[in-house]
Every structure is written in C-alpha cells, then in structure tokens.
Length: 257
Ligand SMILES: Nc1ncnc2c1ncn2[C@@H]1O[C@H](COP(=O)(O)OP(=O)(O)O)[C@@H](O)[C@H]1O
Ligand SMILES: [Mg+2]
Image 1 (spheres, rainbow, N blue to C red):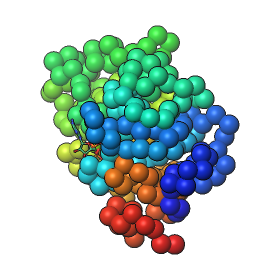
Image 2 (image 1 turned 135 degrees about the vertical axis):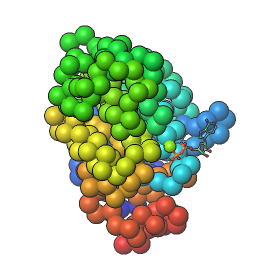
Image 3 (image 1 turned 30 degrees about the horizontal axis):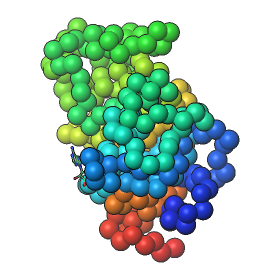
C-alpha cells in the first residue's frame, strides 16, 4: 500500500492499483474538490479507474465518501478540479450530464418508487437498446416472483437488488454504489457483492463501492482507497490493505511501511 501522492502536487494521475494507468481510464478524477454548501468536504482528489475494476472506497463516518459519489453523479457541484469518463470531461453539478456519460448512482437510501411495482421501477429507468426489466430477472432471480409487487413490499435485500437492477438497466459505464449493505444480513451482502463483481466483469464498467463491511468489500474489490478527512490517505491493491493499514489511514493520517 502506498500513501497517496496527492499532497506532493506532482500533477500526475495516480492509479489506485499502483500500475501504469491506461491512456483513457473509465473514470478519472483530477484534483477534484467538493463539499456541502460552503463547506469543503474533499479536495485535491486524484483517481483513475479502468473498466472492469472495482474500487473499494473506505473511510470513517463523515470522511466524505457519500459526498464524493454525489459529486460524481452530478447531484452536488464540484468546487474544484474535474472528472472524466472515458477521457471526456463531465460537466459537474449536472445529474443529466453525469447520466449521459454513463455515471449511475445506487444511493444509500435506495430511492425507489415504493408505490410502483418492481417492473415499473425498472421500466422508468430503462434506456433504449439497454437491458430490459426481464433481463434483470436473470441477474437477480429473487426478483422474479416479486416483479408485480410494489417495491415497498420487498425485503431490504430485495429492495437493494431492485436498486442495483435499476442501475443496470441504465447501462452504466461508471457504477457508484453507496452503502449497499445498510440494514442487511451479511449473507445477503455477500450475494450482492458477488453480483457487483459479475457486473464489473461482464459489463466492463468501473465500480466505486462504498461498503461498511470493509472486509467483504476488499474481498470483492480490485483496488482500495481510504478517504480520511476528505483526502486520500492510502491507496493500493485491495488484497494488500491490512487491518493496521486501515486503522492508521482511518485515524492516523501517516502510514508506516
Ligand atoms: N446533507 C448534508 N448537509 C450538510 N453537510 C452534510 C450533509 N451530509 C453530510 N454532511 C457532512 O459532510 C461531511 C462528509 O459526509 P459524508 O460525505 O456523508 O461522509 P461519509 O459518507 O464518508 O460518511 C461530514 O462532515 C458530514 O457531516
Ligand atoms: Mg456515506
């Protein structure tokens, strides 16, 4: 694991996996800054993530994970820097621009239309030429018997599957998943994470995964970034992130090797 080079001001684009980054990473943040109102939450963020890779974004409560995802989804404005999808800059603060670039967010509160059926939730999100609601039943077979039910009648795990399915029918190039496991049993979380892995592999989208079950997230992710007080304290291959690294990066700020 390496401390993040952001603070050096070198201007180089850091790859979280430490390898040379492809010419046009799927998702790239260059000096990105963002916040809530007048409060800066993260700043100087450098990231590059290729298609087919999962980046686990971890950090203590309040570190800025959700704020970063909302910024990438265009829901919150960026206050500095830029981000690109497939090499093209995305206009910040514009959900439609992010959506056109293929950035799709699965928000931590799922944001389903609870009075609409499962099928209707998928139909309203589906894009022309993309996967159909029926295709999603192959990805999430547990939804098949629930397709005609109102979303509010689903269990927490099924609702999360629906939220993921709704993201998939939008054909994401960059999939942002916030706190997938909120209120779910670890077994359900594991099934969902396995699906996220399949999605990254099959659809070749770049996935940024925020997950409170950090151990599980690291198991399924390729790369990991620890966000501490709005800065990347540590990045590297997910399988090299140890408990000691985590503790230091969460609470310390300096990393020993
Ligand atoms: N709706 C909000 N309005 C104002 N500040 C917020 C809001 N949500 C979060 N914050 C603040 O933004 C900072 C980052 O929070 P957040 O991005 O939610 O962190 P995380 O997802 O890592 O827990 C925290 O200081 C938090 O208090
Ligand atoms: Mg959060």
